Image (cartoon, rainbow, N blue to C red; front, side, top):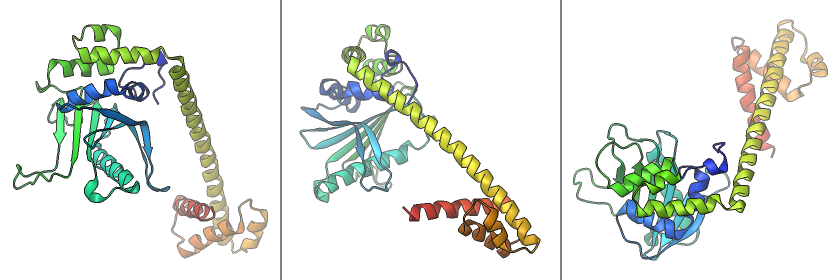
Length: 305
C-alpha cells in the first residue's frame, strides 16, 4: 500500500476507490458512463472481494464487484502501475469470476455476463494512445462475427491522447489522480461532483480513517517481517555455504564424515546430501551445490508440514 496520509488519498488509491465505489449511487452512474449503457438497478456484491477457489491456487482481490438485475456481473479495478500484463490479468479475473459462480452451483449455460473494467492512470497501449478500449472475442476471418460468450473487458487510460471520449469522461480521468476540491469544482461535471461528495464523506469518516491506519500499520509490519526473513535467509545461506566448504575439505582429505557430523551444527541429512553432490560431480562449485541444497531443503520442509 502507498504510504500516504489519509487526507492526501486520491480516487486512484485502492483504499479510497473501494470505499467510494461501494456506494451504488456513485458506482452505477460511473459504470453507465464508461459502458455507455443504462443500468436499472445495481448492487455491490462486496467491496475488495477476495476469490480463492482452492487453498493452493492464486487468489484475487477485486476492488469492486457488483451485479445488476439483468444478470450481468461487474468488476471495477483501479490500476496505477504499468505491469505489462493487463490482458492476462483480465483473462484471469474473468476466469476466477466464472469459477466463483460455478462453485456456487451455477451451470455453464447460466453463467452471467461478466464485465471487467480497468481504470488506469497509466497507458497500457502506448502504440495506440486511446483513452478507452473495449475488448470482446470475435472471429479473425469475419470480424463482424462475435463469439457472444458474455465476456467484455473495458480499459480506461488517463494517459490517452486521442479525441475519443467526451468532456465529462476527461474530467473524471483528471479527477482520478487529483481528487481535490479545486479539480471537482472546475470540472463542470455532475458525475465528478457526485463522486467528490462521496470522497469528502469518506475522508471525514473517523472509522474509515482508523481502518486505513490499521492497513498502513499491517503493511509496515509485513514489510518488516519480509526484511527479517530476508536477513534470516541470508544468514542461513551463509551457514550452508560454510558447511559445503568444510564438507568438501573433509572429503578431499579422505576423512570420514562422522567427524564432521559430530562437530557440525547441521543435521546428518544435510551433511550426507552435500557430500553426495560433491562425490557425484566434483566440478560443482560451492554456489551450485548451495542452490541445489536450498531447493531440497525447501521441498523437505513443505513435505513435513
